[in-house]
Image (cartoon, rainbow, N blue to C red; front, side):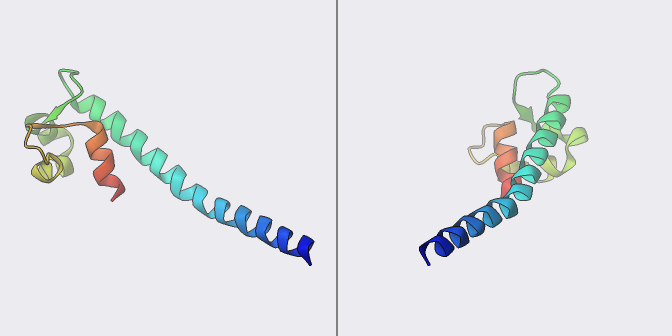
Length: 87
């Protein structure tokens, strides 16, 4: 009985891990795409995307800029955009 229970637990654990892989892969892919687009839009290469940099290059970021820029800094970072995209 103990062996069957151990095998069942192992099977269940492996199944759950397999189910979680696609979600993680999607997140990694999305974050990579965000970082690549961010790099193209960050024209002065300072690691900060201003509203004017986002305007023509990342329209969804531009449309939601004030929501992402919670501290009213006047710019957003790639990490902030990735965090919002994960929600």
